[in-house]
Length: 352
Image (tube, rainbow, N blue to C red; front, side, top):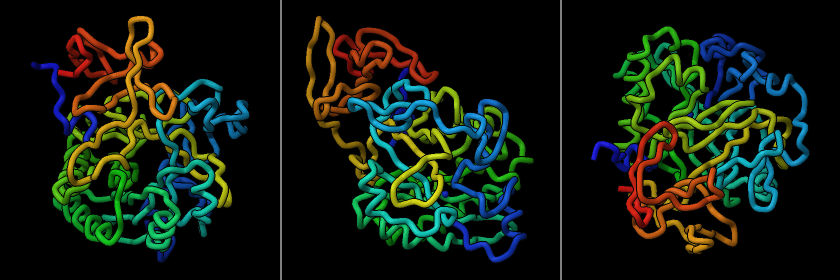
């Protein structure tokens, strides 16, 4: 069946001790080092601006419950539900300084992507001085953790070596979310689309070979102009502020760089997961989605902790899709295009 998508593509399933200003320039920062937020502080927003402070023209969100849960559903800064988002997280680095992870965990933060370092600029690997403490303290307070690597390698061979080093640096910690590669450095943006695509895949291949789930971070502009994501069979962590968060393969969305979280001084990037990675052992496949079916007016819906689910679920060893446009009703008996990919479902809703 040509419409099938393999498990690796369906739902398979990024730290720097900067010693000198030259190292900062190496990361292609467009603003002051002190103003850096996290991955995406040079993200291009919908109005064409870049850098922290551009979202919504620098103004605070008008919707008072932006990025919070309302009646069990996360809302965006316009007051619209973030369809399919199941968990809220953050990405942190040395830019945030000392973090009170107890307060963070209590403020509805389920997972954290923690900067391991910047790998590859002129062969240098520079670790984020807060990596170890953030990984340990986040985990100790019940926050699911994973590293992200700011990648600056210019060849496939360099990317593979960087990935192997990242795996080595991740080994002492319990990793429950995908190990992420942050692809946004200006140092590598002059490469051809195919060259950068091959570098990304090489890094991810090494990560996957070590038993981790890889995920690729970048903003919408770079995903669509600097690499060919149709050739990247790994999960996508999309940064897009003020725009549509849908993208083929997207399982996480960086929604803003102006998040406010208890326990963190200043702004932090907020992330939304459309899949509960922590329910999956990163080395042994996909766990079952807990919950129960309910038939209502001839349509089937799936509930978890009293909340109606949307998006992909895996409750019985099969994949099903709960259509957000139909209030979470199960798709069955035909074809459906989801995030740009066509899937086929049998009469019972099972993806074929």
